[in-house]
Length: 133
Length: 144
Image (tube, rainbow over all chains, first blue to last red; front, side, top):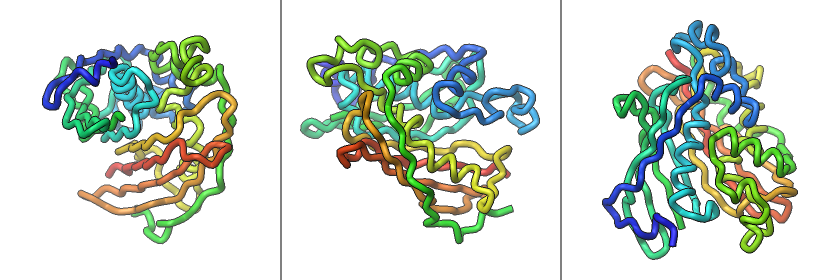
């Protein structure tokens, strides 16, 4: 039985921590094709007013997806994932994904989640939800 | 400079992508996801006949039309001020190596909120059997 099936509505799922290496935006650029200079060039990131290069939002979303598929056991059970990119993630941040099971209706499980950096002080993913079936 | 609402509904050419096994492994590794189902044919043999793509591999096979929009000279988005605001994926059939995925996309909405321009793009990806594998909504914000 996958973990998600043992978690009741209102209960949190086990959080996951994702360290972001200095070159993570470059690895992710290579694998995803997103070479926007704000992600791979610290100087360009500063020029754009971001204080440096920032991680691709979709990479942070992938961390959220990993938390969900690990809970579901079979990745094919993840039917929906929605996120808002609230704040940038920077190299050397640690992204913590946490949340709770919101509801269960038959085989449909709704999960509310978010992601934080700076030891929980900065919410980088908000308004996030997933559906696991 | 506000983005012109006349571009709502603008469609971009379909994008065809053939799923490769090593690209799946490379992508999964890059997001720190070593789930054996994405790396080891034996792990998914019974259920899927081999490895499968992580759900968010959609960013690889479905990014053609949205990329075309981002670099659309007619739309002329200010990429330096553009950030990804929101993303939604609905997943259908699981994606496997050898699948041929075709993605159609169009500008779903252009609006302003709190003085910022929002551009929302919708895409639908189907496999070689015509089954939907992913519907996506990509929302970008042009800062200040």
